[in-house]
Length: 247
Image (cartoon, rainbow, N blue to C red):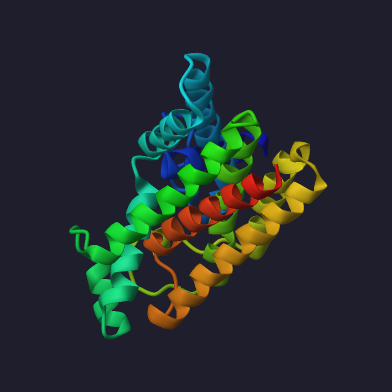
C-alpha cells in the first residue's frame, strides 16, 4: 500500500515537473491525482528557495519575486504556462469547439495567449512582491503551489473530455474522492498561515477553478491538458493575490 502511494506520488512528480522521479509508476494515470499537490509542494519549495536566496543576497522584493517565478517555470518546463496560452488562444479565436481545439494544438502562440501569459505573470509577480516586503516566501509559495494543483484535480474530476485523444484522456479522469484528498492536502499545508488565510485561499482558488471550468465547458465542451494547465495558473495567481491582500 505504501509503495503504491509512493509510486503514485512519483508519477505526479514526473507528470507535472522536470524533477527526477525514478520511483514513479508511469501507468498510474488518474490514480496519482491525489498527489498533484505534492508535486506542487516541490515546485513551491524550490521557488521559495530561489526567492529567499535573492533576499539573502540583498535583492529587492521585486527581483526576488521574479527569481521565484523563474525557478517555478524552469522546474515545470513551462507546462502550465503553455496550457494557459493555448487555452486563451483557443477560446478567444475559434468560431466553434472543433476549431478552438484545433487552435489549441497549434504550437504557435497568438495574441490571446501572449496577453494571458503577461497578465497572469504580472498579477502573480505583483502579489508575490507585496508578500515579500513583509513575509517569508516559504509558506505563501508552498500553499499556493499546492492549492492550484489541487484545483487541477478538481477540474479533472469534474469535467468530461473535450477530445477523444490528448494528455487529459491518456491520464484519465480521477475519482472525486481523489480530488478531495488533493484539496485536503493543500489545505493542511496552508494551516500555518492562519484560518482566515486558509479560508480566503480556498475560496479564491475554487473560484478560479470554477470560472476556468465553466469557460472550458462553454467554449470547448470539456477538459484538455491545456485546460488543466490554465486552471493551475489562474488559481495560483488568484491565491497569491488573496494572500497579499491578507498578510
